[in-house]
Image (cartoon, rainbow, N blue to C red; front, side, top):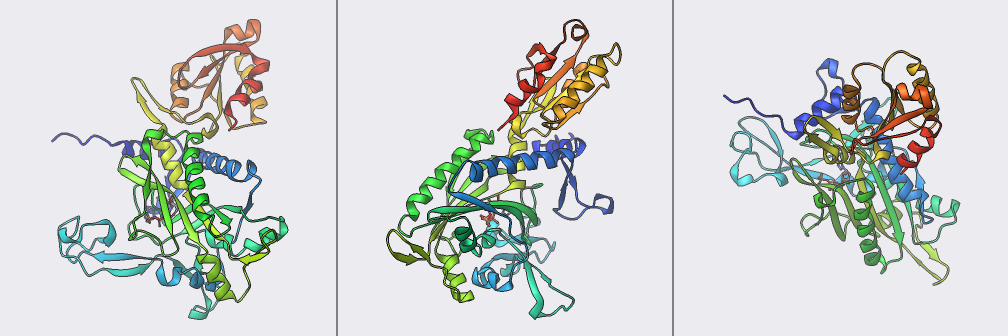
Length: 433
Ligand code: ATP
């Protein structure tokens, strides 16, 4: 029988493990389903994605502020938000093979997708992780791990507005962990039970929400160009009435064409005044905004943009992965690359390592670099290509004569020579977002 060819996903899982991007969590114990750890290169890629998002959402805009709210919140928050009652997915079990499915993701008529067996009636399953605060494990001490970061923003709407003297319209952005007890996690880091979200809630005057919704839809779609994603692999998907979340008036997903099909990477939602109104009702606090110019009070409407860091890591990895005749290259945008430059002495003698070490030390002041003196120069270049390092700096015999080094660019493999004193400036100019 012919051996099954590895898929792109198989290759990525293997590359990201071998090269220190992504490990299975608790691997020495056999792993735990759908939990992953980010290794030395993974944590850099993740940080770079978050920084790009933060830069474009918070630093480049005068109308958005950042926060970092607590994961554990007052349990009433989740009653008000509708999550205790409504954050559920329909679950079915196969009576034959015992596999578990999300009823809205399979064709129930055809029975179990695994064995064709008979399925149980769908029952609603709440996706929130529950735990207890303090030593007593009873109903009065239940707290939830937040299933979205958005609620931490709503409850801080007036704190941020007052402390930063903001006027509507303005937004609040946050990056942080969220937890969902997904029925069917999978596709590597695409759907996990613990993940990190990057969410921004934009508060607007009621009646202007549709305009702002269009604005954010376009802004967010454009942002993927900065992330370096091929735009032919991106599209919008509009939620139909049966797909809309309990809080939403309108919703669009941005989808990416993964090897396993088109799937959501970001949601843009018009959440109306649902969340703030409910928090006003449940907390008994007046959460209206006083609009001085119009001399009126109202509860702002909210346009939300919500994406997942882990999911964008998978997107950038899939999109960057390129197989060429004799090499594999991760063609990340330079600022996303975990390592910005590798410094390579051509041989381990004649003073070349000493010069290379000096260049390395100089570059380290600004970014993550890698020093490598082992193996043929060709193999060393390939090793860097495979992890997406945009520049390789080689110290060779000409360096000893005239002080110049070669700089090799990852994608074109072109090499230029520059004076070693200019390396820091040259790389810096090219790896900043
Ligand atoms: P689905 O219907 O696929 O379960 P959703 O529509 O509930 O997803 P949202 O609540 O809109 O998802 O989540 C916003 C973003 O958070 C998603 O676009 C995704 O990037 C990220 N995200 C949501 N759930 C997960 C998860 N289980 N693992 C990783 N990322 C996630």
